[in-house]
Image (cartoon, rainbow, N blue to C red):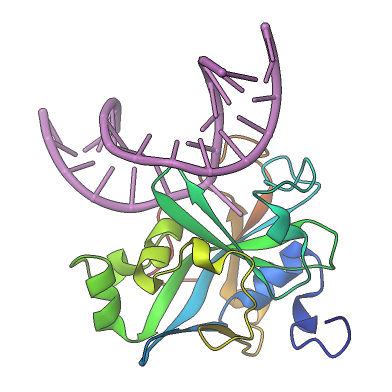
Length: 192
DNA sequence: GAAAAGATCTTCT
DNA sequence: GAAGATCTTTTCC
């Protein structure tokens, strides 16, 4: 799983990976149903970042972040909601990209069902929301994104003028770091 | 062994 | 706009 890795393009620092992931698509297979979304908002985290779960080294909770690029790191926040990360960088270095918002491309009705009737931008414009919509939970901890049940599809990188960079949201440490990226003008980007 | 904090969302006033 | 819901991991005594 070192050379020939199809996720070699994620084997870089978390900020670059966060930008490259914008515009890429995720495909979720539930039984015989297919859900597909486009990534529109991300945040970068790594081991040198006080706000990151990986900043104090590996633990049982975050060890997925120390795996090789192309795995997932899923965790429960506030006892209620799941957050979904894509691991990047090389194995042994704890870095990853939080997926903050996605745009539904296919299977929107199924997502509405998973979200108990909510629709429109309320479907996936937040980290916990998109996990509900796509039925991502602890079963996807350390999942490999080349498997059919949840697959990452690379698209061409966006030009830098289509990417807006700001400070991150909802954290109490390292608030000033500019490590949040989103597609300029997209409706599904979370507010604030 | 116990307490506190946490990369959030929904609901109510 | 503000507070409640609810549970896992970490840190401290």
